[in-house]
Amino acid sequence: MPEWSYSVKIPDESKIAKAVIREVPVHPKVIVEIAKAINGMNLKKAEKFLENVIEQKEPIPFRRSNKKVSHKRGLSDRWGVPSGRYPIKASRYVLKLLENVENNAENKGLEVDKLVISHIGVSKGLTLKRAMPRAFGRADIIRKFRSNVEVIVRMEG
Image (cartoon, rainbow, N blue to C red):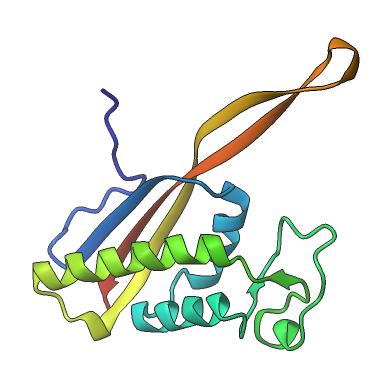
């Protein structure tokens, strides 16, 4: 059995809450862009932001994986990046993770309104491979990428 641990070591865990979700069926490059957008946000504001992304009211800025990504109105005013997308599937998984960390904080006795996302990390999960038969005895490999996402929130102030 593999052993899992968080990528950040925190000495005093009394004022933080943690949550992790493993093997999300979304490419890590999409979740990394979401993580960059919500890192450092208040937990409630981040949840509201992701709900707006799911409803396609507010785009996620794509800074790194932005080839052939269209520009979105008002995105460069807020984020300084003109290109963005509405990654609905990935936003649903990250929103579920934020709800999990909120419940963990409530169980620990922390005030939910004062929680700030201090760390959100994304790592590559398993890659599922299969072959697609092609003409003349060839085959293409189809890869399905998975992601692991961890989040740590702390009390503000």
